Image (cartoon, rainbow, N blue to C red; front, side, top):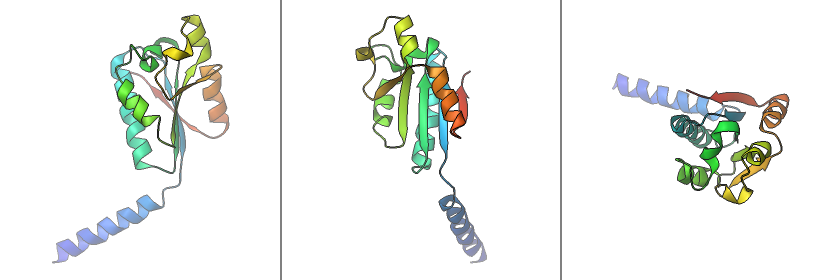
Length: 137
């Protein structure tokens, strides 16, 4: 009987701590062309967006990572399109990178937006107090 009461008390205490977690804002930086990095980044943002629904998450994709957000090349297109529908998740791709590779915005997975400069977007987010996660190997 004692163990079950202690377990229940611990469960209630952990739920109270979780409920008091303040919302956060996190920007994810993805530049790798590696599919494994794309899949890992999607797992991270998915888990966090579901675990912390009052928080905001933005993934910024640029440089060699463009395949991640292209309809005909992405290994995570289904997951990305579904996550992009969530209120607390946004996906942005660098317009300069699209221009460099001569890719039209129509080649992007639905739900992916553009920003003029991916690096500048990340810097602005950090200036606004957003946390930063670099997704890499």
